[in-house]
Length: 318
Image (cartoon, rainbow, N blue to C red; front, side, top):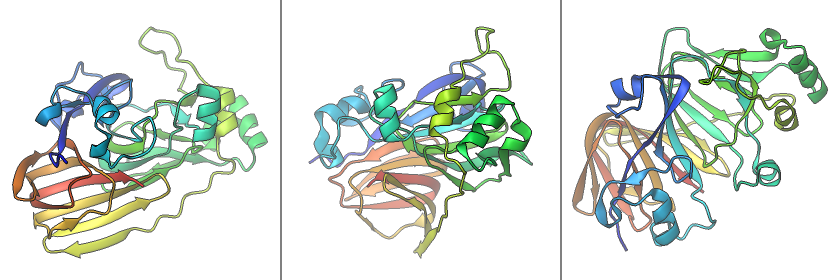
């Protein structure tokens, strides 16, 4: 079986709230000065990443999923399960919420809802996010939305580089201006906007809101998830498991020289290099890694090793 990692060319998306840091920080070729999203590891039809190396060079990750399922441990399902993004929020994103799988399948006829999580790569001083709301019941939430009590309804949380937030489906949320974030999520593009600051879209008209859907799916009351980080120090690396839940796991790998050989405990592995450079060694073969790289380590790889100075976010489906 092929053990060559799949290095990916991201899909870049313009957004009215986007900026230029995807170019300035990571070196991506962006379509404009309002580029908000890099879909680094994506098989979603709205932005599939293209494989840059090996026998599948030029194919999309979706193509590989359809025709070479053995690379992914013959993982079940018609659709690649995860999507890794980097988001540059020059200004605030809309206040929004995502459905769970059941609601998305019934009402949107798509395979996945959207549970996600955020790692704060960088942010301006005093940056914040919207994370949850204050209503205690769905009726209270509905009433506050109708009366546009945004200042009292929305919970705002200060953030700093290195912070991590788990955003399960049903969580009212918004990434705010000044934040550069890596997002790991289900492979979904279903978003319900509940509030968009009454600003116009690129066509000069107010962007569509999804008030009823937001009321339907919002968690009421909001409860912050309880997170426990598991930290393991080995050789010249620190491995911090940020999240392990029923859909995926997410970890931060801080490499400052050389890791011990890392044994497989995943069906396949998604890796994004946030900073630094180094090499990925798979059974004697070395692959260069640098800041901004996104790749999938296929199922046949039983052991890998990292060398260099790098920060990575690593995830896998469960």
